[in-house]
Length: 158
Image (cartoon, rainbow, N blue to C red; front, side, top):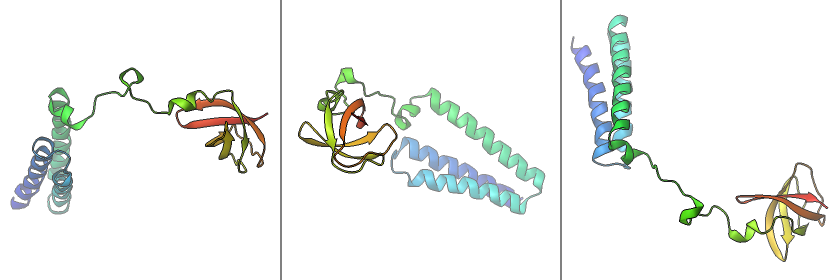
């Protein structure tokens, strides 16, 4: 009976450490990791030392408690401490790409290296990392920019 108590105690203490990670010291991670290890250790201890029926009960009970635990966290303000819910949108000033790169569409240049399929190109006197539409291009090949997506500049031979 003492193994039963020890196994359940490790699992409960593991969940308490995870709660401590969420509410008291978010971002520190050590308590959450140790809590997870204790939960796994409690389940392994149950499977090694208890009859299989009792070990299954402990495993299923832990899984049910985990599901309930997560559902409660999602419905409370605690979830906002774990998950970043803000969005970085252009209207609020967030840019994933340099504004000057958006104006490159349709411009022409010359490859500075062999493009296999990526490499460097000189476009309007400035060096850019580019990628072809799929094929290889030799050095000093005339190029045209056909797509600009984020920091990805796609070129084709002219």
